[in-house]
Image (tube, rainbow, N blue to C red):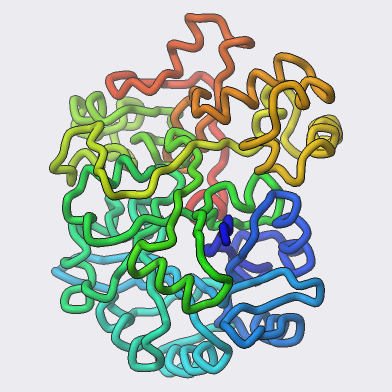
Length: 432
């Protein structure tokens, strides 16, 4: 049974998340997007876990169903902030659990070490190895997956966390780390360049902070498994049953390139290295992005492709494409009207993006929009790189002259210093 899954999400009780992020909206928009299985997010939060217990029913196999039979898996994200090796470490981990009993015991253990009521993604001063041991002592079916592993501020390989290997981060518990999450700013091919990651599987999820179709399932993992927790766990641990991942182009991620948001400076790794990673505008250290870090740790050539790994494909959210094509905001009525019109000829957004033939698409939208959808399906949409909390932007050659298009290509030797007014940094910058 093939399942498109998004197993890293949040609830309305997490910082910088939509206040309407509830079970009803998660189910509604998962179905619209084409996601078949969701994580619950935030199961340690006292108000959210009460909602989960009230609204979801265990099917007896570790899958939790709504009244209309949409499936969830118990999931949360925990932020670990501590000191190791004389420096501060900040690592986010996704946690999957088999049942409410395991969740209750996890919560009990965490309460011995701090509070859980202030945020759906609580912070604890627990080193990663101790965290894994604690959870395995509760139930060996609990799974820990290092989250968005390259993000600068809160990730295992992030430039501000400084771990250079899974072993360095998890020590003797590294053998219990079976999978890593790519995050928006990296893709499997970037991770294949590290031979140390050959022993772990690669998964991708959205880390959504709202339920809209341009957030939910924007990255996902496709499994071919029975719809049971044990089957899911086996696939994550062994790789058997992982078909592929759905990724956004890593240029779209908010930390792909190095840069300074307040100075509107964006640099690829080579140019950043030439200036010693110092912002040419304010003369302070830049935030070092994911591409730089992967190049630092890689021990293989750039286009290395293993024989025994699941594939992946780039798919940008349909709303994003319509928004840029029409020159309207992503949540405007005009964009929604076009989205709804296109969606009517498919089962859901993923069906539109992956399967519906050109001829049917032409029956509901313009030839230019159809070309964009097909290019997206083929992974041919160029993206202006994101940096320091700024999302990358898809660039359509149909609407951009050659000079401007070349300015946005993924060329690590380029520097972009924008004349636009800087955007103000918000809470969402570092958590989505």
